[in-house]
Length: 203
Length: 203
View 1 (cartoon, chains in turn cyan, brown):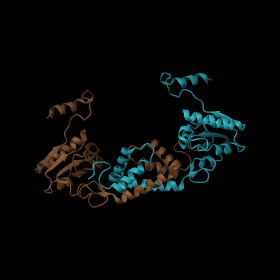
View 2 (cartoon, chains in turn purple, orange):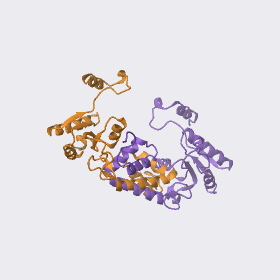
View 3 (cartoon, chains in turn orange, yellow):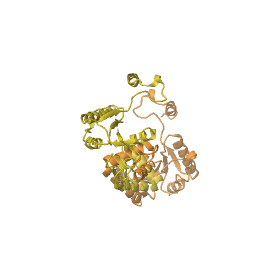
View 4 (spheres, chains in turn orange, blue):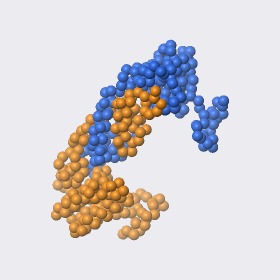
């Protein structure tokens, strides 16, 4: 007799799938069940496509030898592009942040992707975000300015400060993205600390 | 030059993974990117485990020949259990609803799992939720009472009404789960239509 737990049928394969889906970030047990039911009931080709994409990505995707972002070759396309300005190096947290900078169209330099940010409470220190490869990359003799483009969160700021200290100790020029009022915002709806920074950094 | 779109590196395998993850219900492009980055950066064994679980579930999981729920054998464990009361048949929308009824410990009969509910606006009619197999199952000569345990949403009620009409036309006894005030609720916080039903169905 079953009086609790998962559906009484097909516990093994279905349960294993729900467990595997729960390893995705932001997916709890209810979401994982809904995903599993959906795939098995309505989209088995989608389940097979996802399995194939996972296997292929795990096999093919590695880190760019220069900037550390995801790539399938030795170098990513940005690092391999001779038209980029090799004197500028932007430090970002994730490939998504890098994509946002690219979309802005305002940056022509190269990148270093930390693949994370300092988070001492979670045990993520300077070693985990690869500060040594970054220092080696920034000190290659070509880079003249490092633009810190980590997020303006507490952890992003902490990361920027730690990297800035290490780079300045090596005599490199370090800048930070400007803080201020977002384009398109009414001042009325902007938080007070952003307004304070915008006042302080007024041009 | 890339000024828009996804991260400039590794577009193929990573992009394909993001696309595949977007087929999961409730996952948009931002979530899919976060999932893909997380798996590739922090949990490649998790990605491989998910791929294997997907392949195994697609291959192994099918529908129980009697109740239509997910199972790996010809019959699910509930239908194969001789201690269940075969005179009672509960109609539920999903395996998750079946599991909820099981957890209540108050039901000893068998099930029919619709794997959905009527949703005319989405093109889900009586054929899609398998009303013919249900009528055949309920009319097997053993079932004496069909308990409609679809949800108390608009679509769940519509489903229950359609099934009730078809079953009654065949002379079967049909009951519906009671509506009323949830256990542990203050009346103050219960919605008005629930209170109205609880008054109407008072014992």
